[in-house]
Figure 1 (cartoon, rainbow, N blue to C red):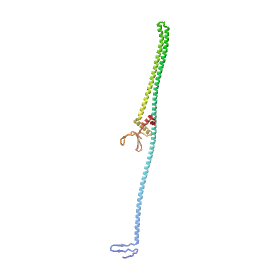
Figure 2 (tube, helix red, strand yellow; figure 1 turned 135 degrees about the vertical axis):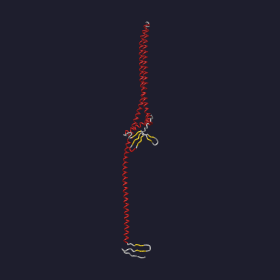
Figure 3 (cartoon, helix red, strand yellow; figure 1 turned 60 degrees about the vertical axis):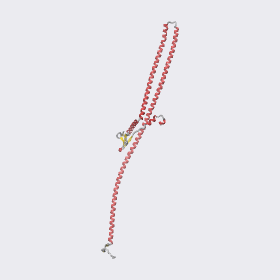
Figure 4 (cartoon, rainbow, N blue to C red; figure 1 turned 180 degrees about the vertical axis):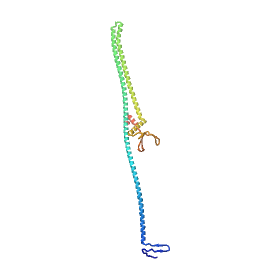
Length: 327
């Protein structure tokens, strides 16, 4: 083994062997080489860090722009939804007020119908009472006429009998006084005595005929009044029955409910064929349907309304005489 000493600035010695060659460098060159490698590594790391940070800032800027766009779109959608929600809430409030007004009108209509039914019922009862009163008056008048006729006939008979007895007594006395006279004088006297009796009988018969005619005319007038009252009562009863039957018929109640529904929406300011349509025929899931009314809303939305009037139970309660059933 050999050792060489080297001096700075001198060329490095070489060792030649059979298989390898050794190059000996000085310390300054080695230090410069290490510094160059370190600087190169530092520059490479700085370039890599600069590239990575630039790409990160670019990605962050793109993500910020995307987030800003998404936030702006979300704010716009939220504002539109808030506006639509406010409109829907206002429409719901309006529909609630319209429903309340419609319920009040329906209650007033029901009270008016109940009052009309009560008035018809009271009028029917008053008609029955008037008919019974007329029948009682007819019977009382008939009894009174019979009593008056009997009294007048009895008085006339009593007067006639008394007058006849007096005249007969007078005639008998005259005949007894003039028994000695001739037959012609007696016949003349009897004729003179019987003539006033015949006149009196004629007047009595005329008075009886007059009383009978007046009684027949009074009976005829009373009979006509009773017949007129009976016919008016039957007509009132028939009209009341027709009204009750009409209110019991489902188609009549249905039509009445449809008219009330149309009046409600018209009073609410809606226009037919613009805001609503009636009797619209459409195809349902299983069969064809035809609602009473279809109300059109904003956004292509629709409200389907079917009017129903449950009135049969109310009529049964009004006509019932049982207070528990009526209550």
